Amino acid sequence: MSVRRRSARTTIVLIAVVTAALAGLALLVFLTNRKVDRELARPAAPPGPPVAPVKLTAKQRAALPASTTWTKIPKAQPDPQPFAAGDGLLVHPEKAKVVYAEPGGPPIGVLPTTQLNDPTWLPVIETRPDWMRVLLPSKPNGSTGWIHTGDGKMKQTRSPYQVHINLTSRRLTLLKDGQETGSWPVAIGTKETPTPVGRTFLLAALSPSDVDYSPVILPLGMHSEKLETYDGGPGTIGIHGWPDKDVFGKAVSHGCIRVPKAGLDAVAKIPLGSLIVITN
Image (cartoon, rainbow, N blue to C red; front, side, top):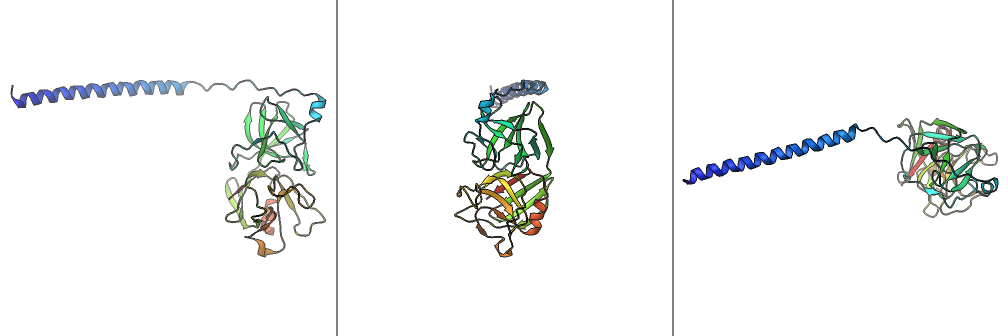
């Protein structure tokens, strides 16, 4: 047999082998796609039944600490996404609610209906059937807890507003429905008393008569990590004005955010509970 004839036969065999391999691969892809299609066609598994809260006696409930800007809830779980934007969902308890570490888990505190004489409004960061996970106003910073909503004793709303504060640029930006509506230079904490980072919320709006540096003070659900107390309070971080315009853009405060009048006026109008995200 000539070399040319053997070469042609070898070529034919190779073509046949390659063709068979490609056919097998095509069959495998087809079967895999069919399996994926079947998986996608399956309806999503329905959520399990709502988890009931742990029942407490009156004595057990009375022994739980209140979750306020004055208190600490040591067993509170940290915020799993401390810089996430959230969707604006807010909740207000119409009666004092027990706070749980997780749905059906141990109770860790009690959430009162008011904070600093204003209604308690908190941002919701996670939901499950009959449960909502909220940011708490108590220490440590970034604390979260679950409240049972199955009894219906809750009000809900949505805030279109968010406040972003960047400590590097020293700037506060107000957003509505994700669009910037205003931005202002701010004064932030010093190296010794830095402004903490993470997401928090507008806790209350105060107009104290004995304060001459700002017509309105806006406490947040966040505290100084260096000062246990300040000016008779628990070291709560707030947004407020300042009469000396030279401070804006500088790191000169005890941790609070000092903002020009136009910015203060704008932030003071957003709903309580609106998300505040502070980043480096």
